[in-house]
Length: 282
Ligand SMILES: Nc1ncnc2c1ncn2[C@@H]1O[C@H](COP(=O)(O)OP(=O)(O)O)[C@@H](O)[C@H]1O
Ligand SMILES: CC(=O)N[C@@H](CCC(=O)OP(=O)(O)O)C(=O)O
Image (spheres, rainbow, N blue to C red):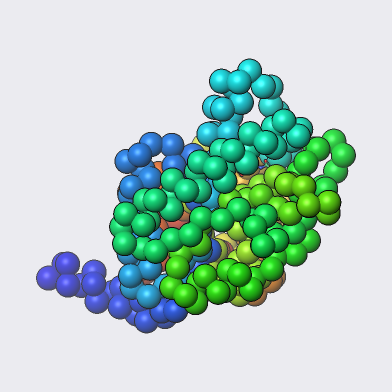
């Protein structure tokens, strides 16, 4: 009976999300082990087979760090963004577009989900300008061109996109993957944007695991940032969510990609498992 109840509970959500675009940012920390990857992939395969239209924007920060370390190339971040020299950019493309993207696509294809991996630079999917001189080849997104992506999605394929942009002179620019996901979600008119990370969601007090906040609105986010409850990498993540909501995305979710089946638990159960952010409390 329990199993039947779970399936019945999910039916309302399956109907609601049928044919809807869901942009999933799959970050580096949630993809470090093959077991973790398999489990996230199987949830996304499930979403696809119940009729949703997932779009994957992936990260790969830890993988980039590993390659740079092997090559003895120093790397550092300013406000969460990697200072990107031409040499580092070359290595980033090698890791993200050359390795992570096709490896994810292979896993989906192995699960009978027809998948294409593309660089955000291909077909000028993501266009950007240089963000600041001090960051080097880091892009600030100016436009997302959806024609190709819509073609892929409507053709029934799953796009896996690496966060690289086409710069003003045709050069490759490095984009933070949360930011890339946000701009793609806005441009595609996505129903949802889901950020998979390595914490359960947003905590009132990050040091107290009992304080996970399951629902947030833009005004409560601004209050929490002002009050100093939120810091580090969570601030730009929430700013991306605010921007996605402003751009018409119905709901953003921050969930733990390292927790088994967090994606389907968040989307297809009443209470979810992470933090959901919407314009009004739901
Ligand atoms: N209130 C908070 N709730 C949750 N995480 C927080 C909070 N304040 C700061 N953080 C930090 O934000 C981090 C998530 O951002 P980040 O490390 O950039 O994630 P990712 O690498 O997955 O993109 C958490 O691991 C945590 O250290
Ligand atoms: C500008 C910038 O910092 N870009 C990121 C792109 C990869 C990324 O965002 O990966 P995660 O999601 O795994 O962190 C970087 O170079 O690491």
